[in-house]
Image 1 (cartoon, rainbow, N blue to C red):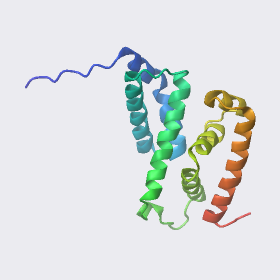
Image 2 (image 1 turned 120 degrees about the vertical axis):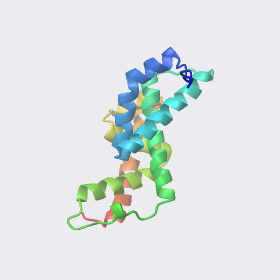
Image 3 (image 1 turned 90 degrees about the vertical axis):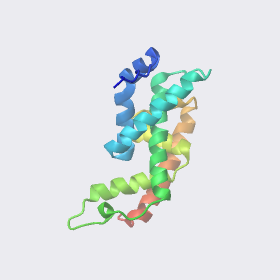
Length: 169
């Protein structure tokens, strides 16, 4: 049996993967709450990076690009799940169901309904822990705009979560 030739991975892509695969996985896991989905995001992001490296498009910050790509790919998974959602057995509350798991699912659902920019800013701020000035620099927008997006997004999520969970306040 003849051995198949190995696929040649460019040195730059290999270096980027080794340097940032943990960042991409953690970012995706924080959003999806699921290791399998985070692995899917990891593959998607680095496939996009391969396609991007084949184009003439320049990348300003590799880490920033990969973090944003992970956020967007994870949000895509959440959105696709919401669009063809059927009730799964694991979604049915059992005796002593976990309020944290309910809240996590409700938050994921609410985030999936946000506009892409709002979801990205919210994720960077509250799931990734970046400050408004850091987010502004990453996205190339003003700190004031970041603050406005954060305020509006929190208000929208509060309303959505209240509707989903029954206003407990």
